[in-house]
Length: 256
Ligand code: PGA
Image 1 (cartoon, rainbow, N blue to C red):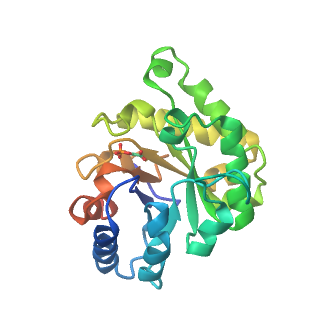
Image 2 (cartoon, rainbow, N blue to C red):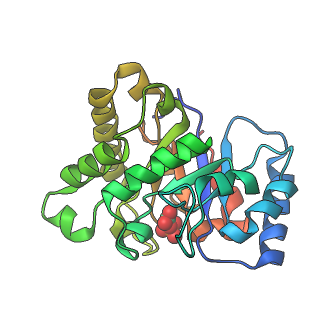
């Protein structure tokens, strides 16, 4: 059973969903429900154009607002991109990097993800670094190899001190948006592998303090069994973060 030596962290990745009105209404509902609760950390990741307004709407509440991606460069001729300092300017406190849709739909490389991590930390953003294997990689027994490569390169420039500002999300690609969730055993095995890897890259105290979220079809029906796993410290939620009705029971998960 999870004794929560690390503060649980539930994040809602809205992806390219909701409009301005819907985003504001959802943020208000979450704010009212979460109140001043501090035993669980909650963050939302709206589309970039809504960050500014949502950050102002949620100012003074414990809900943090972040971006879904940032550019690997600070400024310049990168049409369509948003830099990490611009995200900070808009009010973002953190950013998701290396999400599987960035890696597999937009062809982002491990090296690019590593550069983005550097940019984000330099700009003052906390980072959720996503890693995870494709179904064919799992079937070929390559899960650990893939996760290890993504982590080593993603964390390539990160210092021990900066690790306090970093969260890892394990998101098996075959479980994202598919309704298929990793079993608690499958998630637990990869989470403890990741913690061991981070211990090897840094040291035991850093590995112990690192929060590792699980992501991939998390909902109110499976959050308890996943959060009960010792090395699962939170959830990165996509589809079920798009309505208060579905998201609230996730961050109000109760293991008792
Ligand atoms: P899902 O998405 O919860 O809709 O599977 C998770 C994610 O992509 O972060």
